[in-house]
Image (cartoon, rainbow, N blue to C red):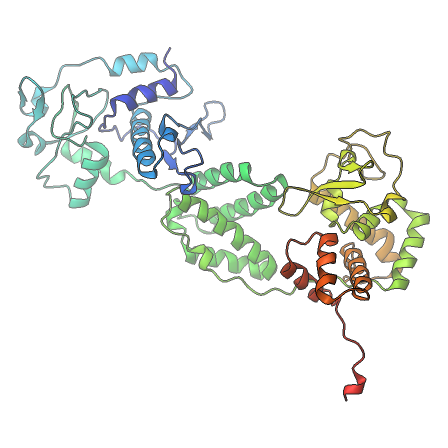
Length: 504
């Protein structure tokens, strides 16, 4: 039994081009070459989708690598994969399927048949090859259907000249995509009338459907984005696709979805929601188009040139000393789990979503450290200060993979996405604390992080110079750079001047 991969390898080794039967029902996407963002350290390959006989929908197939990644230059890899792509296109157009045993079809297509000399015109034989004369091609266009052409050199061709009803662009397409590319052939070919073949060429397209483009991008992004980020990203793209289906029904190919179309969509998002939401959609669509450029589907990403709108962010105010003490005293009686959640924000300076991700195994009681997954980063480690360590409950009775904060208690399995967990604790804080103390929208869980960073900064500032104060604080808060820390401190107004009344 010949597997689909073996057939491709076999045909690659022959490296022939063919004419195609363009009348076949297309049950696959156009094969494309993935070039690893032009990075030779990554694996390059040919990818395509084929109709799953069970679902009737296109499904990504196993990539074709061949021996391309053994080559060390971009030109060599691209040359090898171009041949694999050409061979794959030919096999798909001849009816080969990755879901079937193709042995019988392969045998049938490789069995020589009698050449129909009435349609061909004349075939001249010599000891090395057979050439289809130009006068025959004036009457017919050579199209490959069910034969395998064999030749001594790597790229046999049949050349079409003087086609009265085929314009210059169509002639180029015949030579590049349908008719093999040298002047000598050996074997037998099938013939279609020129007008019929010309019509088939006019119906042929090398464009990528919107659905195929989105499928490719999501397949690649799923491997590189975290689950939470991928959920939001894929949701944005699917909403964009739904809008295209409803409002731009005439657009079928991604090449036709230009900057002007995207601007119309973003304007609708802005009018129905906010500038921040519009910017988020713009970022997702731009990332999508970048993937298409990297994979040679689009020549350029014009979406990144769409300006980002200014937004008015909701600033979280810091709590006064009195407010913070009242909230802590109240939660000590009413909701100790929520209080411990807040203390992780206050004393370890983690963000709410980072606290939601914590598992029992992330807490090292012996070393007094926490390992956590930071925003857009891999795992990071922080110390557990004594003020937090001393209020931790007994964690020895829980499994390492239990979540530190469950829905109603400490420990246990909580099978819910990170965003949903954060949303739950945000709502819980509003119900238990904000409604009780009549706090406005400017106060939230994040406010505790701001409040206690402000306390630490002002305490350090009493002992050290401004630069040393910030250097020590950066180690505590986990900011990546001094510039990032300074921007954060300006945002929460942690640096206030002394009384300047004597200057008036």
